[in-house]
Image (cartoon, protein in one colour):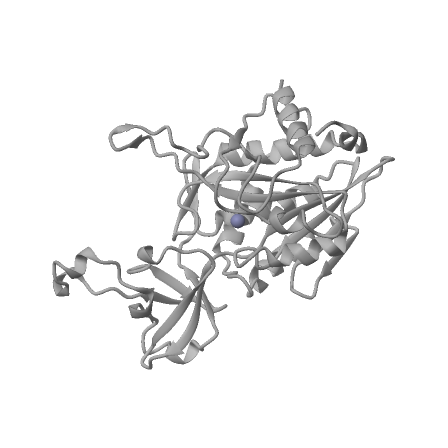
Length: 357
Ligand SMILES: [Zn+2]
């Protein structure tokens, strides 16, 4: 049975995701993303604030009686780099911001600073390397970002940088950088534009998630919600074969719908919320999957410990190759995630917290 009030994903939503993923917003430097968020939510919220750390806090009140205060959090920041030292002639040393595997860096194009100065994380070409050098990873301290001499004066120590990957639609998939978590930001904007009348929506577009869930912590204090849901992306380790055998070690899989969390390293989901979302998905025939417990964490990891405790849940779109130069998600997983959120929020009542855990 399809949902009666299904939210659509069409040209405007693709354009919004393209704008958001192409923007540079490394943790602590989310201004370019914040600007897009503020433009896109204008006129849809009753109140919009920017808090002291830079998160956007937007409130949209419902119209029915007995409304729960529901905080939805999506992080604006992405993993990336910070310029730390000027070696002269357009060559710069840098540090990693957030979780990036150093082995993947050599040879990658980057954008530096808010003007997206193009550069490359330089690597010695194969002609010049020895066989033994090629067996080892180049350590971060030996890597440099090269922007060329002409643009050298446009880059300063303290500038942020990120992978230079343009959004691209590939049939049923989207390839982009920072789908983690600009896809969550896109969904949160859509939910603010289509808020069910039975809840007060407290939308937190958070900063500094990738360096320790920091913005969400103070946003949850400010909002003081009845419950919270983190909208994020989670790695899918689902390639079809592993050592020549069928891969049965996946944690989440593309094309299997939104990933609902029971546990990750930072939080245990509220079982009443989790059950509500599973029941709503089953009632509406929306594909969904349980994310396998293990590493990682979302904004829910800091939100649930705020004040006297806040019942929390995380829901993620599965994506391959997160925190690398290019990640891949399926449009169908995006669509089912947005619709499960909208459907389950529409069915949320205060009585849910009287249920057994
Ligand atoms: Zn994330």
